[in-house]
Image 1: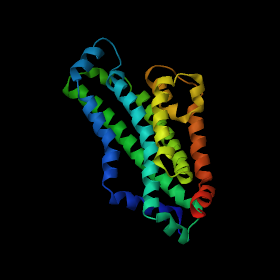
Image 2: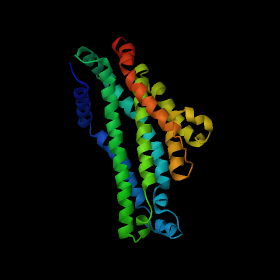
Image 3: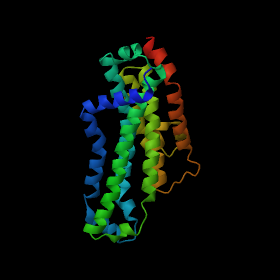
Length: 253
């Protein structure tokens, strides 16, 4: 019987064969570097007025990443699942001695790994840029303020991204067409940015990255963090039902 770990390693091998994944994973980190060093004089000016330098440095960047990572979490599953459909990979997997539940779970875990690496690199690059600005551009305020809110934000972003990725593995198992399983949700994510402050948006997980952004940057602290609890539940339920979904929509299709 093929274990989940062996399937996971096989999925990592598939990703490593396509160098485009490296570009997609590293691109947010490169954007963080360019954004941080775009205008150090403006950062020095604003921090000189008593503003938090970490907030000045990352306000626009966090808004951008709140779009990028949910979109990545929606597109990653489509690319991985579509690749299996095109290359008849699922037919091969169904003939192998492994549990059905492991097949989709392995794909979820690979996407979670890619998201975790990308988000961790973004966090490291932002923190590194802040301290380099303090040293090379004479902005000592970076050493006087704590970037803890950024760490909280990126951790929340990872949880939200993982939940969306797991959900879309399930959606892509049931529906194969891009115009149905991916495109509407990309549009919904954009719409959620403009209406994320509406209380009813707590029921729409595509707004959660923007709620986390508001909580981190603008002081709208949501004490009970309902959106994080819902995100964890979505990820847990998606992984739990993956075997049933695989058998119903892929194996027996």
